[in-house]
Length: 277
Image (cartoon, rainbow, N blue to C red; front, side, top):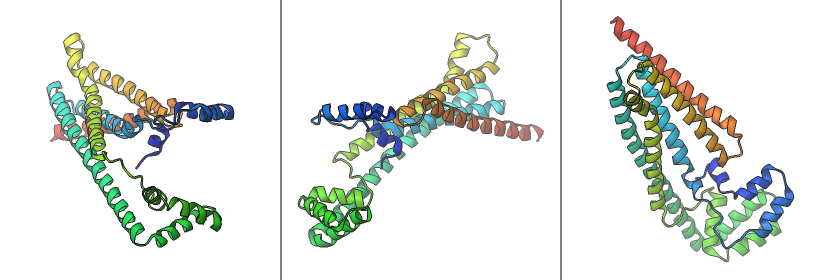
């Protein structure tokens, strides 16, 4: 369920700094002084995917519309109508899709947990043997694997969760997973709509503020704003991973540039075909 970026986001900042600096003493100090009574997980990890994915998808979709419309020499009102209607319709679809997909995945995982729980109740010897084999495959001796698994098997609910992670590679969701899925859907909608509106805002604000500027400047301003936002989003994404912030920023910037170039080229090509006919 968790991506690499999300799992990295769950690492406390002090531990991450100790690792990045290869500082064993700092790592020791962190583990010796941390308060185990507090929750170690960071909530932003769970919303990283909908925020980053929704924001990137929104701004790229919007800018592709602007670039294609500019390449096709469409008037500003048409660009605004196409842009805003498409952005908010897509944002709703993305938000609902994120909610339904997350909910369906969690429900499937819980159904698998019920099956594992039933098997544990009806044939615990088989489940214990499977887990012993898994631990042996990972390098444990037979004696140690038997000791570890038999100890964990005394605590049935805990052991079933361990089986889900070790045998099926699945993370059991929390009891309020539907609420979390709803939050992820809302985060996806808000990120898509807000970031997707940025390339279009220049077509509204600039003519009202600087009415004497030519229309060509509107597309240029959209390019500048989109490029800056893409780079910043990529840089922010690096906070939740071990990647360099500049590399992440440039990667996202170049991806957006490729999308815009393709949309602009297709817009020009189609406009040329229509003009000829």
